[in-house]
Length: 149
Image (cartoon, rainbow, N blue to C red; front, side, top):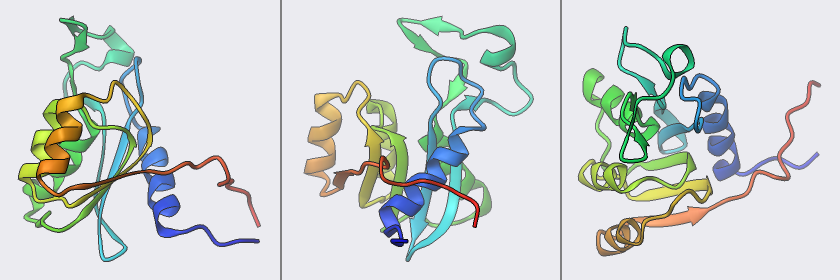
């Protein structure tokens, strides 16, 4: 059996976190890591104690569900809530970040994004990552299987 690499390991963790998503349109998970240790995770879902898309449907404005907080933002907010610095970290996320999350990721000092799936990759997001020296890497998990031993 071949051991999975760190990118695959943390992306698999992001996939697991995505299973907690309450969005019916797209389940997204994010993990922030420093020195190969998870410091935060997040999934897209409603604010604490709020109505969830899985219960009340999505609240769509201009083609976007405004009921949910994005997975990347939830992971960043978890760091803020508990006083965990995000500078020089890596974000592992199931889908390419939206433009709003891109700006938050850059402002938080995250230096690398590893993602699996393209999702409406905004050209300005790609440009902002490049201008901010944030490395972007797409990784496939097709060879990764979880089986019991």
